[in-house]
Amino acid sequence: MTTILPEPQLSKNTLWEMFDYRLARLRQVMAEKNVNLCILANPISLRYAIDFDEYQVFQAHIPTCYLFVPIEGPLVMHGATSNDFHNVDEYCRPRFVSPFDGGLDLGEKTRLFANDVKIFIKKHQLQQAGDSIALERFTPLATQALEALKFDVIDADCLVEQAKVIKSDTEIECIKHSIAVTEYGIKLMQENTRAGMTERQLWSILHQVNVANNGCWMEGHMLSSGPRTNPWLQEATGRVIESGDMIAFDTDLIGPRGYMADISRSWICGGGTGTQAQRDAYQHAFDEVHFNIDIIKPGMQFSELVERAFKRKKIYQHNHYVCVYHGAGLSDEYPKIYYHDDWARDGYDGVVEPNTVLCVESYSGALGGDVGVKLEQMVLVNEAGVEVLSHYPFEDSLIQ
Image (cartoon, rainbow, N blue to C red; front, side, top):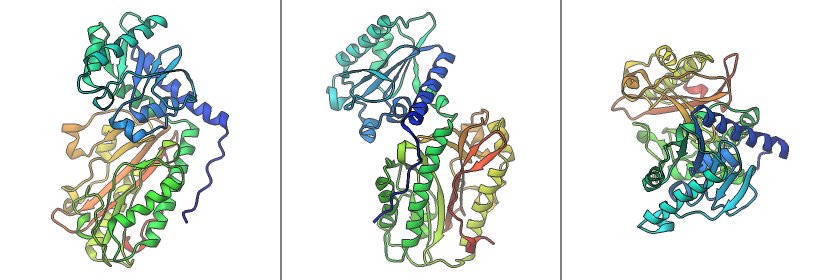
């Protein structure tokens, strides 16, 4: 039977203060961008704004519910089943603006949706010269309907991502709890790794721990074994794990209270020192992660981090991971800091701010090889530097 880990002792008032902090962060960014109304439908954004936790995966692809967040005034939730979300003042039936709910002709539905927005803005005297409406994750027809009423519409995703970057102390406590749950699941995975089981069977152990501890979902099934560890980004299959196989995984786990634990580890089925290729790849990934943790300082530009980052060996250069660092909170979050090789095409600059959580990544696998190692740590950037948040042990037998 899966153990239920004790949750942080957070009072109702402490949780409400966290919810208030998150809403205030969103409204702060709205004010900076001259946005008078933000309309949210992404389930992670809804969780951030009001701790919405209903049918979140369903909501991610069929946006039945949405929330009006004015710069000042009442929050109105459309379509929720429960009527007790913090800071919500009013509950209404939604306009159904997806094909599942509203049919294949959404023109009239989105016209009525836009008219609801107009009425709300007029009622609460929100319209100011130069102000915009921020909208996320809706059919383009909704944007067109709002623009037909002469509203300036911008993308709400960027506002929410900017708000989420800076974490409160309670958010950090919640993240630490998700990490503790995840590392307990990793421990059970390692203890139960054996030849003859499939990749999916091994991966399911982490799912069970997450669900039993009031976690939410896994973003993928990112576990592979043996020759499937190279190249990376191959999800778990029915492949039978063999003794001596390298097993590599990335948790991508959305845990209790919706907070993410994004940790990667690799080990050998059956233990031991492995082959030279396994030890070399593991050492390279281990060195990269720890080097890149040590260089993080608050106030650094993303581009400076990239320039100073670990210099990967040529044998592993081609198969590098998709980024060196990325943010984490209620999910993978802004920023995503790319490798130097990809910076010219995909990179964007910014500043590493205190109270940001970063994931520090490495995938090491030779081009054309059959061994790959994935390691990843989570850290909190603070005024002094960094605090490492993830503590599951590495494989001493593979570190040379």
